[in-house]
Length: 215
Picture 1 (cartoon, rainbow, N blue to C red):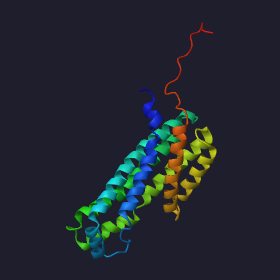
Picture 2: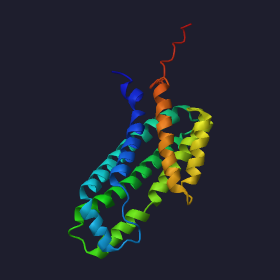
Picture 3: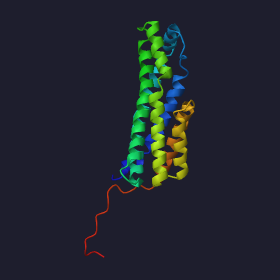
Picture 4: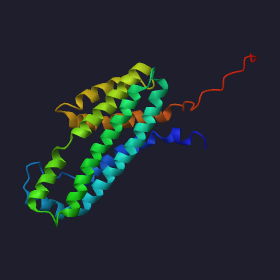
């Protein structure tokens, strides 16, 4: 059915956020950055199943986020003047944000899978990375929000207040309050998804030009 994907694509943003929330809820609080190797191994031995589930949910959340970033880029590009650089930055930020999520998913999965094989020092190192390797996620969130926010302010694809909110989140994402900016970006994605779903689908191809003799 023509237009089906473009009409429903924004749903991927909502699905992505729901999956990430479920991953956080199921995964719970993992060992602190400075936990000993033995503490890390004991935690993953006791919570192997929940950590597997959280990692898989987070990975699927990253996948749906990429689809949302593509749908958002399509809408932003139609209203963006020039070469579409801002919408491309937003899409690239979404991909990098998804990569950052996959890093955490992969580290959690590795620790859950190898808790009975790793030496304590290895587990401690992986746990430290799982706690502090957040820069790809922070920069990706910033690029997604800043690119989308400025594109909205310039092209008007979505309400201006949503554009300003994205700019603020994008700036905060690379500051010490970046974790809260990441949480706010989830709310922004849900709101943007709802607004995109309620908006009529834009035509996907230009109208055929009228012939010279047509009225």
